[in-house]
Amino acid sequence: MKKIIGEFKTFITRGNVVDMAVGVIVGGAFTGVVNGLSNYVLKPIINLFLALILGKDGLSGIITPLSMVQQIDADGNLVWKLNSVGKIALDANGDKIPVWDLANSIYIDWGSFISAIINFILIALVLFTIVKIINTVRANHEKMANLVVNGKVTKEEKKEMKALGYNFRSEADIEVYRAQKKAEAEAAAKAAEEAAALDRLNNPTTEDLLKDIRELLKNK
View: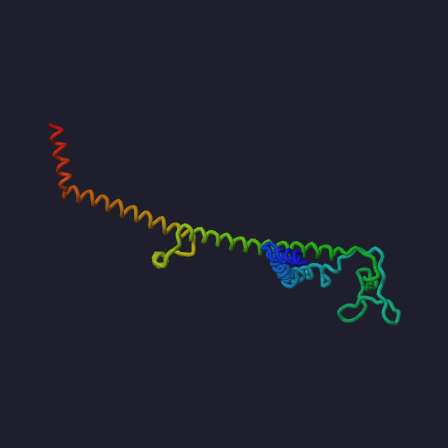
């Protein structure tokens, strides 16, 4: 029994099990966010445009009747569709428009099918957008991490970059700034080397004088 308990404890405390549990919980919450954005923000906007195009019933009115049953009221009378003033609505042929009992009717519901396709596209679009944003943030973080590895921007560098009009949070600006600083350092080193050579030429050391004398003796 102790062995089983020990193995179970080892199993539930393994890193991958904990990571999987966290992933399932976060994934469930993430699904709620995606569905909420799709169902409560984007779908109502699309349904509004569809209602303006297809009429007030929108997608719910797009059906192909196969075996339809008309609604009956409490008194056993057939129920007819009413117009805006409360009178029985008539179609283009002057016939009464029935109100169908969809629960007991057989029909092809194209509207629900189209709505499911729209819902799928919206969820896929929202998921793609969120994942793209996460990947972009992660990529920027990795770029900044590489910059830290290659040389962290110091406070002095930040001040100097700000004074020169560079953004120290931008990788491109950091690279341009450091290339400029490297070029300035190389130019300063070259100028210092040339100045030292000129100073030595004007103020030769004893070793330099001995070398010059040796060269003169060789040429004779």
